[in-house]
Length: 152
Length: 258
Image (tube, rainbow over all chains, first blue to last red; front, side, top):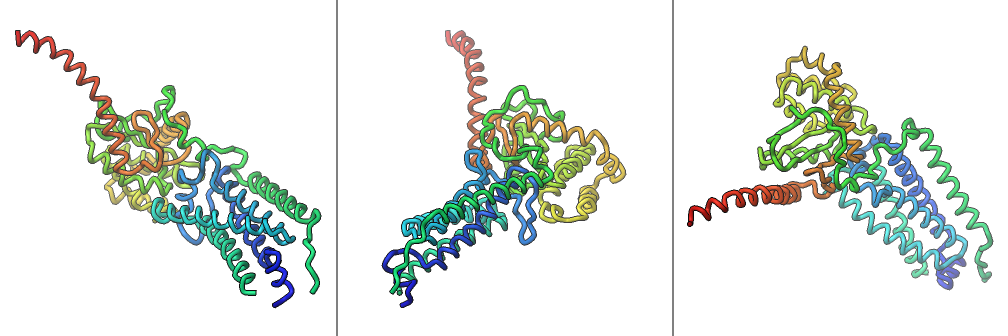
């Protein structure tokens, strides 16, 4: 048992490397969401080089809730996840648990968005898929951190 | 074993605050560096679902003609604002074709152009549609079919104008007249008139469909929901007429029975 993992077991604080991985994934998601939020307000075409259908998704009525772009909510969520991961990296146990809860909530909402893209809009947006991958990365990082802590 | 002290202090808040500032600055920079950033949110979806009822003082749009199907005297009017480069509009196209086919002259269907600023080819596609319409209503709807059903082929094609010319030939347009009409003010002014009407009606996303002046929320843009709405409108508008008819025939019936 390493010194770090022993401390994890005692305190519930994740190894710093998991918290840092969480901050990096959250930062990627934040950058993606900020870009899409700005796109929403400038109404400029999004470069859709890998797949087609970006505009169908981003101009659909599902692209906003109560007049606020969905990407704006995403940016807020990623910023919150980033903040929690930073606090966890500095030893805040509660922050890491909240990070995990939030990541799971975001992943469930992401599954709904993927359903909309696949079955309602029948179009995919690569930036939305990047965001989905980032969200699932947050959950995976959290789960692995818990598994490692339990094993050690 | 050395116990790890929680590293608290102000550093986490400094990092979080720093990222917040960077995110805001990056957002502002992206917004101000975009070509349409200064023009505001003309095409945002903000008002899409709040435009439940169209203002009555909206400009009339392009004169109703080739862009109308059904009966001009029908009690139910379905007015669609759409963009040829919008994927959701291409998906709605067969739905509205079915609606037109099912209801025929019981409704008045009006197609309006609402090319979104974010789509680089949709304004020209609308002009092409209007230019085809200058050769008759059949050509108008045939060109619309071509543009929507082949949207995925021309939307990202740098030679899209040649592709459109191919559609014009395919539907049997007089090519010389069509080429002249594409560059004419007549086609352009019809598109602009529709656009102005849509903006005045609060349209900001496509497709936006009004049924008797009431905007249909996008999730209801399917055959079943549209039929329910139209049937309800047909019933609602038929009742007063039936009541008037009954009122007119009642004294006659009474007289006959006496």
